[in-house]
Length: 343
Image (cartoon, rainbow, N blue to C red; front, side):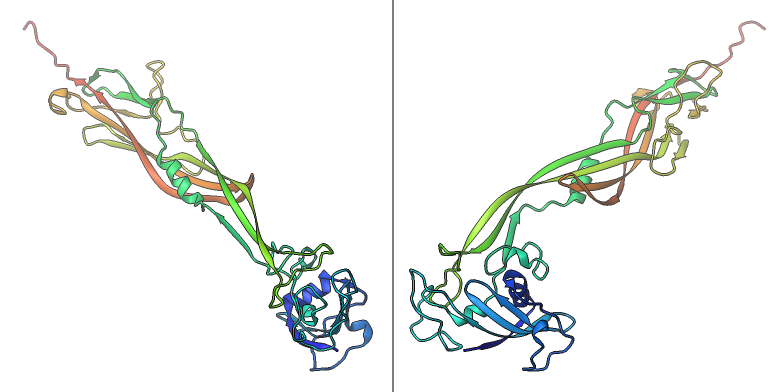
């Protein structure tokens, strides 16, 4: 006895792709109720336990079919019953004993249905996949890396070490050459993926429960995902404060090394540092009993980050908020006065 049911998208995919076709199914732009297509345009499927024939219809957003078919199961050691002749399971029908006509319209997610099923569908019913694991925000990791940036070896130097009023002191930086600073961190994240898999008998047919639904069990696997976060930081602004309310600012341009605000180490009296300052007063009484000017250098670093999954870079560089680091040094400045010793 034929059975009819309107099936959508996933079921048609299962029947077209999951079983062995003996004809060609052509999607029609319109499907009239009960209208039969020519044999070469019909869905015509056959496998060990089921036969089916129907019209495949294309509604633009999805496919459907009016399926007409029959279910049968060859005689075996389990049952000698013939195919029921009604469109519903007969009274007293026992799972896996004889054929259930409604099995013909059940959706079984198979790997060869990939073109019509959601990504990641596995064999079995339903097509349910759950993934558990810690989530990682690459941006938060990048901000943490950039927030921990420090240049402990950087120090300020000067010439002359003991300054003189009205004589320029040349300043420079030791321990940093203005280069781009790379930072990175790699995280290994465990992922547990679980799917529901249909239980099958020795012949490979699905086991069914008392309601005629497939019996399923959960199958879980654990994989490890590697998340890599890269950060690159570079100097954007150098700001010198000479301690007497005088300052000097040097701007850098774009991603890359910038040496303009680092000054130049002393080599000879004819090659000055671009960072220099002449004091008008001595440092006597400055910073309390220190008697020295407090010289400070602030470097504003810009940064950006990108991340990868299992070695594959995802997307481009993304910006991070700027961050300023500062260093200080004391500079004593004396004053020379002319003394008349004889008239």
